[in-house]
Length: 505
Image 1 (spheres, rainbow, N blue to C red):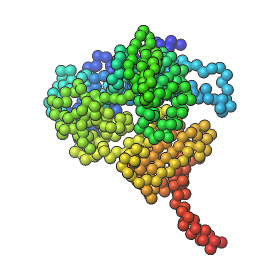
Image 2 (cartoon, rainbow, N blue to C red; image 1 turned 45 degrees about the vertical axis):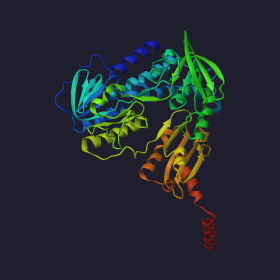
Image 3 (cartoon, helix red, strand yellow; image 1 turned 30 degrees about the vertical axis):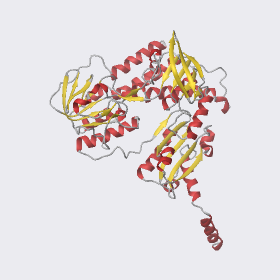
Image 4 (cartoon, rainbow, N blue to C red; image 1 turned 90 degrees about the horizontal axis):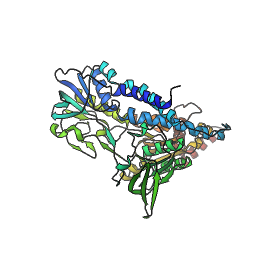
């Protein structure tokens, strides 16, 4: 059997050979391109493949690794770790189902990472330089920068374009904590390179990434401390959803410090020390073996020389675009995390499709009308689409709220997944869905029905009339629809029904 560390190196080399091949020979430049795409992440790859498939002459520029964050340092590797961590948790909790494993659960962290890297390497072929060359895309691996309103330079090679797309994404941002940089903190760009599990891990930021990876490492056996300046974790989600995840993280052994700031950090040998201060001004020191920063992102705009192309941007919010994703240079569009507020792979994908229509065919499609769902892959998962609780309050929207606990769903009870809930916000007095939240195992997989309903104007009445297989987790939405139907049975309606039934006896 191959030693785990050797296997790790092999899989890493196989992955890099696909997304960042050494000695890559750039294609010959021949005339003007219909579309030049800067950035080979999800948005850029969809733009390049889609345009080439429609017959356009396309160039794709990537300075680091094709596939972007999602494949390389985001969705794919994180979900690989989360799945392994869930397996460990399931074994530990097997006794609740009458299954006894006997020995204490141990985690071979190197094997966990090898599996993750093997799957990532398998998936990398879909985003590889070879594949996109085969699709008819000219792949340039190097630094792209604008030299004029219709020109881009790639390491000395000039590309002239009719239209261009900026899809350079974003990167993790380090908070301005004195001494933090000297502690060499991990981010999502480096945490998946670990070969040994840190015994003690501090996670800065209790948003989706912090909560997901904090829970995973706790399940692997690390002593995890999650540090958040807000008064609760997952500030973007509903308070009840955050409270459920808070309880779940605590049960997995995560120490959660809310309302806590970090005033200083220092490294002494292999130990990192954080100076913490809570809302009452009380200070304490926390010693750990590694620090993971999951507290914000910054758009990748600095090296693009956007001024030369007359493209407006901001170093905090990214490239400025209108509803059609056009920049201040009408030849140039932007898509994905570099410009769009919803920083998700699926949002970048949809933005890229809008750009293709608008850039190549003078379309009028709008990104500001997209209905964007999202999910956080803790256990339980938290999934949401449409208006949030805070948005409804700020806008003063009149709503009816229908809420059903997962304990009311038979499959959830059988699976031991009965701590969550489903909530739907309806336009007052109607069945029109404005927003929906689900907290449950596999909530992200079940959110599609609500996303379709909001996008296509399907109300709860039609969902109530739709047969859902029994017993499934997906029945939660039928439960919500049935709960709404019962609200229609007002005393007046019930009185009428009783009189009718008495008359027809």
